[in-house]
Structure formats: C-alpha cells, structure tokens
Length: 376
Image 1 (cartoon, helix red, strand yellow):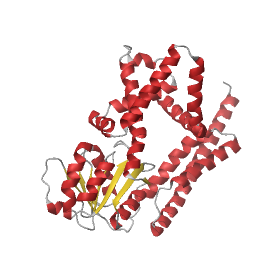
Image 2 (cartoon, one colour):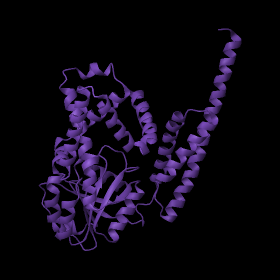
Image 3 (cartoon, helix red, strand yellow):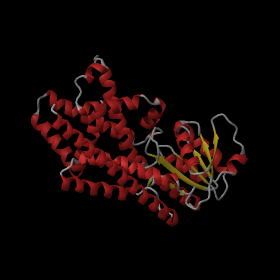
Image 4 (cartoon, one colour):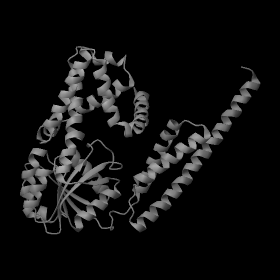
C-alpha cells in the first residue's frame, strides 16, 4: 500500500476515534439526565422501571434508524445496552422502599434458588430478611416479628406450611406464597391466615438477574395496606404485576406452563431416542433448531421435581395434553397419507389464530434468532 493511502487510512481512523469520544460523551450526558429523572422519581414515588416508556424509546430509535438508513437490529442492540445501563443507574440510588422505611421479611425456603433470589433483591433495597428452612423449628416469635412472610417451598409442601404459619401471623402482616398453582393455596390462606393473605406466582425462574420486565401474578386473598406496599415495592424493583382470580390463573397455566413444557419434553425425549449424537446435529443446525435445542437443554438441566408438579398438579392439564396428542396424531396422519388438503386446512386454521400476532412474532423471533446465532 502506498504512503498516501496509509495517510488516508490513518486519517479515517482518527475520525473514528473522534466520533467514539463523542459517542461516549453523549452517553455520559444521557446518564446525567437519567440521574435527574431518578431524583424526580424519588420525590414522586414513581416506579424506576417504566415498560411503556422503554417501548416508546425503542420505537423512536427504530424510526431514527429508518430515517438515517441504519440497521434497526444494530440500533436495537445498542439501545438495549444503553437502557440496561440507565436502569442500573436509576436502581442504585433509590430509597429503600416506597416510603423510605425498610420492612422485615421472613422467607420460608430462603436457601432454595428462588428464595435466594428474593433474599438478594430485598436486601439490596435495605430490607431485613430472615430465613427459615425445612426441618428447622417454627418459633412463633420469628413469624410474629415479620411484616411479610414469603413461602418459597415446593408445591407439594406449600399448603401445609402456609396452614402452619397462618395462625401465627400478626393482623397487620402479610403471608404469601410463590407457587405456580393458586386455587388450593389461596383457599388455605383464606381459612388459616390471621393477617393479610396473597397468592403470587413469579413467571420466571431463579436464573434472572433482576425483576425488571418480569411478570408476577397476584391473586389477592385478604388484601390490605401491607399487600399494597408489597405490590409497590415489587414495582420499584421493575416487576410487572398482573392481577387474576386463582381459577383464571390456573387455567392459563395449563397453556403457559403445562402445554408448553409438555411440548418441549416430548421434543427433547424424541431427539434423545433418534440415536444421533447431539453435537453432530449442531453441524447442520438451522436457527430454529438451535433455539429449540436451547429451550430443551434449559428445561432438562433443571429440577425434575418442579416440572413433575407443574405437569401433574394442574387440574386443567389433562384436557390440554389430550388436545396436544390428538393434534399431533392428526397432523402425523395427514403427512403419512400425503393428504395435502388436510395439511393446508390445519395450517390455515392455526395461521388465522395467530394472525394478529404474526408481525410481532416475526420481528421478535428474528431478533432472538440473530442473538442465538451470534453465540452459536
């Protein structure tokens, strides 16, 4: 390469260095504004995490990307990092609670993975957290001094634990659980708890880093001031609270959990029985296969007892599994018969059901696939 060309290259790189400094400077100015927003939220008691605002920011930058001829995907990746930094900066200096007063929590099952997650996030807000584990004696004073008792034990133990703790609760305290079925446990809370009572279901596992963007279902049993406070506090931690009747919740879980996990389990067990080395299949992977294998691997790396309870305890589960099996048999039959008309009808019926979601589905899945393939 000639000397003038080298000079041009060095000059262009110098321009990039200048632009990089400008970008960092703009980012620093953005964080200054974030700090001012943090102070405003502190004064008003507004939640740190505002999902609708985040979505609006991402929509805005999509428009800016289109105007400037820049890849939407690249801009989205950039702004995910920007927004995460902004959320972290806002969360670091928030007051300990909605009122600025810390609460006393007792987490029953607090050494389990979900119990540890709640313990970490609650103590980060300045709350005092005690832990009671299986086999440890239940001391009445331990329960009565707690403002909120959170039961984080396996599903098959939750009813008996709540029944034992409920009568010991103060009238102004709250007893709640975090299990994935709510009808039976909420009935137990209603009949045994002397204080406020609430069924909750975090729609995520213990591997999440925070509650930001995560849904937590609330099934109020005997709400009161402590329940209202707890809802606000979880909102400040970024959780999206959805309220539902226990029966409605359990019906939805038959689809969201039972049907979904059943499909993943069947796929995983089928692949394992095909007699082909998993690593060999990866050489030929499509993006969808790579994503599917990730979901299968995630499920089978976790506690089988948890999934056993999810699959077997939901009273609505059998009817949905029957639909799954019937649909699989019908589809397999159409394929075996080479019945193209039946195949097309079934495809069209499902496409019509998902039609309102198809645009969002394509955009979301494209983003997920690109992220997955970048790490493959």
